[in-house]
Length: 182
Image 1 (cartoon, rainbow, N blue to C red):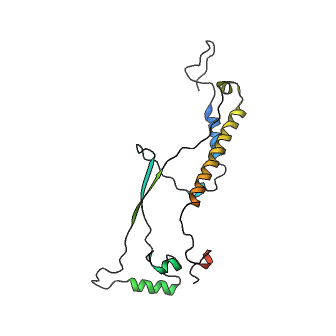
Image 2: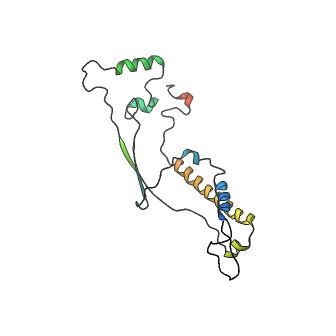
Image 3: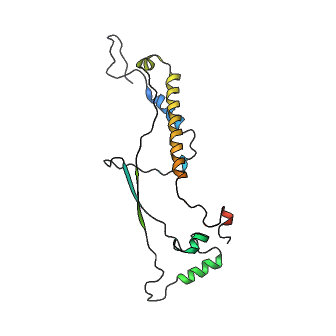
């Protein structure tokens, strides 16, 4: 690390005489202390030069029964629930020699689009805090900002999860035990 030479009243060419990455590391640790909903998200890198719009294409899962089928609404995506049903459905799916177009399936691709928004908090202070405060104050500032950033991120993730039209248990089922009971 370069030495800060005092004498002429100006900053040295090496910059300020504090090592801020120590303080920043404390803020990052505080921001990652409590991640309840963050573990459920997936990370995608932002494409450059695309503005504030983020688009991603994905293929939908191909179920072994059609989602438009009434049975799909009643019992879910699995056609087979027992070993006998699995064996029977495998037998029914077998193709005869020279068979034509049977057991057709379709792959569906969708494009999801979202707009970005900036969130954040700040602490406003003067340069005297940098020069004359002790390490505890600098660490405390960054820890508080890190915890606020984490709380904001967790709130946004929870809001997204509550607004998702995901079907956990289809039909009359309210738990895993009741799936396929009817």
